[in-house]
Amino acid sequence: MQLTDKVTVVTGGGIGLGAAISRRFAQAGSHIAMVSPDKKEQDELAKEIEKMGRKALSLKVDISKEDEVKQAIKAIVDKFGTIDVLVNNAGIAAEDAEVPDIHLDDWNKVLAIDLTGVMLMSREALKVMVPRKKGSLVHVSSTSGKSGHPRRAAYACAKWGVIALSETLAIEMGKHNIRSNCVCPGAMMGPRWMRAREVAAKNQGITMEQAIQQAKDNSPLKRITTYPEVAELALFLASDASGTVNGEAVLICGGSLMR
Image 1: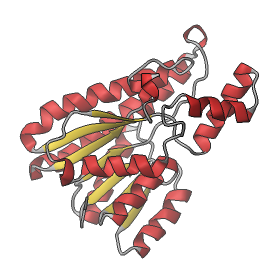
Image 2 (image 1 turned 120 degrees about the horizontal axis):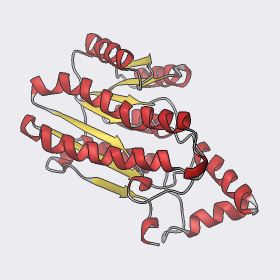
Image 3 (image 1 turned 90 degrees about the vertical axis):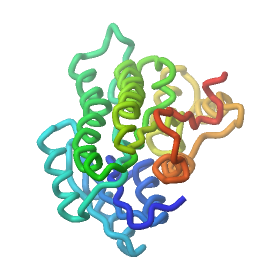
């Protein structure tokens, strides 16, 4: 699976899963543009990518802001000349409340980034891809986009919406030779997952060790998915290796949704 001399845009590209995707795509030969409201980690990763012999760009962008997205896409095209792949990875899961207790501001913030931001980035990137009659969109949804998520209603609704948007784009953009697919990770080992385990331990009155084991036991494989594993799936969907895969929402959760 190669992306030699392709140009990939990764939202939230400097930390966690986004960093793993940026790094893996660069290893596959792609030049990388990363957008995020926090540039510190992105700037460091950009230096690492450049040492691989790839071009890299780090931009400070709030993807929920239309003007900032437009400016970012212009800056990327100005530097690289085109966009071949867009990975919509950025997302938040701010609220921790059942629906009767959700604050509207929290709801709106999650949907603005996790769904509207995906639409804005896709819309502007497609303006570059459509005239060239080629491109690939990879959106990071979630197992929460396949099944409800207690105390994360806004997050679940946004991730369901990402799958619907991806399928719609797959239908609309097929005539332009542009594919659109989702990866749907479950729990992923990392700082965000550890914070979620801390909340689970507190809510259930159990130890952190018990909360971690509980999550592992939810998977038939008895382990948690890693960032590099999800990045590898994203690379497959972005590359020509998945040439007729279109409109799919691929679970990568160790089979946890079967439990």
